[in-house]
Image (tube, rainbow, N blue to C red):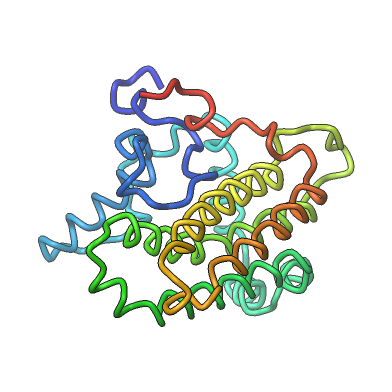
Length: 242
């Protein structure tokens, strides 16, 4: 971390973001973003590119992650190839359980409805002279894609707790993902509110209904993850705003 190249990165910031790098003020300080730029640059030059092909000096800047990654690499080397194929092909019981969770199903239903509405508004979006309306639709589409994955990660994180974990610990993977979900919901509700002014001839009352659905989802997330908003996200909650 003393190296200037490493010092600019915020360890773990990419774990609790919405993956919308183009509008993130922390993109220059995100290792995942830097890795993606290097990957895109290699492709543009027609060179072999792999997201896993990372110079040793730019390995994870997180001191906690380094030994974990080393242990994982050693375990994979010792694992029989047939056993690895079996682990990859067989669905994890907790994954299946998380996919059937009411919160995940709720979020997936919202995503499908939101994307269907956005697709129906494609013509209106192309012709709209109002950049605010266009931006609202862009937010709804981007966050709808992100939400189902983040909700799955939050619920799945509940099943990963060890017996020795502190049940009152706020800084858990589940809480971090749940906090991000609530932030995405709030931003999406604000975007839908913008569309309530488009008119019933276009929206047919859909924005108001989607806002209600998101409010219910937010309340359900808050009930399931009551300490989520106290989670401190690296960078986003620790760095002063510009």
